[in-house]
Length: 85
Image (cartoon, rainbow, N blue to C red; front, top):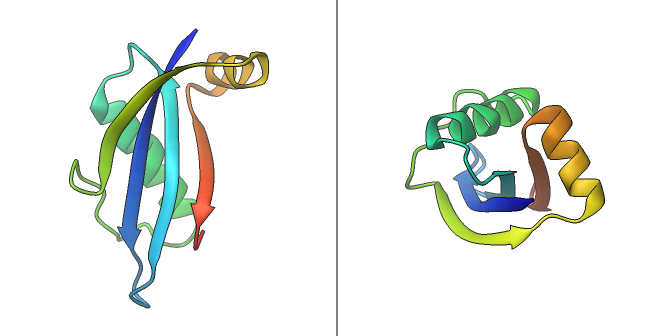
């Protein structure tokens, strides 16, 4: 299975930059990617932050390993926390 990777940078209220990737199956529309990102931010207590195509940009396509593929099939997405999450 191929996965789309969206590189996401959000400025938090303390001015630090939160960086995470959103991975989804390749046929996922962007509005669904946004909803996954917004749900993630809400779970972090940051639901009021903007998440548009400016903050969340398509980066590349990769072949999903077995673990990622299982998560994408079960949850529809995967979040990889990178910085300040």
